[in-house]
Each structure stands twice: as structure tokens, then as C-alpha cells.
Image (cartoon, rainbow, N blue to C red; front, side, top):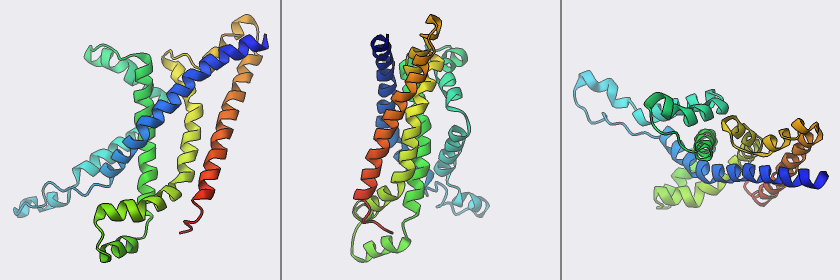
Length: 230
């Protein structure tokens, strides 16, 4: 019985791995875009000369909209976001619902992009202003300063919080079952109908092994970047 159960759970775990990988593929770069939006200093009214509109000259709509969006996503459950993204278009706008797997990836990518964006922002803002100024003195452009001076230091500083979020993602993939995605927890629950409970506990071993492998990987990355002590 052990081998059939293992094969069934491996099938469910493969679906969980696909959700995990595709979420990272889309959320990591999207998080950087959201980060830049939340740090934007774009001021559409800064050139207005009318004194009555002077207050608007300091209004940064892109930053406000982005940070409000991040606040909403981080402040509501991922499970709720999954349900809204899958059922919302059909119920609210009479549009055809996207596929279950597609809705899962969209919801996970948006959710984790918002969390990653705050980690990115914290890392970028933690770099001393003097390093930017030193780069300017050396005649470097803003992009050169960012990629050659700042980026590696930011990567070192955000590695620990990013690793925590990524390991959390491993466990959050189980939420996909709420909209009917077959994953490892679902696979384990099927054996309850057959009078077996141990396969459900067995699913924990898959999560522990995968999370343990990621922990070792991130630990090695931190050691390789240990020369950035600042």
C-alpha cells in the first residue's frame, strides 16, 4: 500500500511544485515593478504655476495607488483573493471565468509580488545615501550606481526575508485546493474515504523535505554573500 500511496502523493506534489515555480517566475520580477511604483516620485502637477493648485504639486499618484494596492493585498487572505479572481469575473461582469490553474497562478503571483515589493523596497532604502553620492562623484550614471554598487548589497540584505517568504509559499500552495486544484493535500485526503489517515500525515514529509532543501540552499547563498557585512 505504501508505494501506491507514494505515487499518488507524488502526482499531487508535482502540481504543487508547478504552482510554486510559476508563482516565483512571475512574482519576483512583478514585485520589482511594484516596488518601483511604490517608490515613485512622479509628480504630474509639479509644473503648475497656479497657486491654488500648489498643494497638488507634491501629490504622487503612482506611489499612492501602488501602496494602497499593496496594503489591500497584504491585508486580505490569499484564500479570499483566489476565490475572487476565479469567480469574480463571471459573477460581477458576466465574463467567462479563467481556468482554475490560471486563476491560481494569477492570485499567487499578485499576492507574493506585493510581499516581495516591500522586501525590495526595504533593501533599497537601507543602502546609505552616501554610496549613491560616491557613485555620482565618480561620474557614474544612476543605472550604473544601481547595478554595480547597490544591487548586490540589496540582494544580500533581502535574501533572509525573501527565503522566509519563498518557504512560506511552499506551504501556501495547499490553498489552491479551495478552487479545485488537485495538489498533495487533496491527494492525501482521498485516502480518508478508504479508511486510511496516515497518507494525510505522510504529505507533511514532502513539505518538510522540500522546505529543508530550500533552507540549505538559501543558507549556502548567504555564506557566499557574507563578504557584504554592511
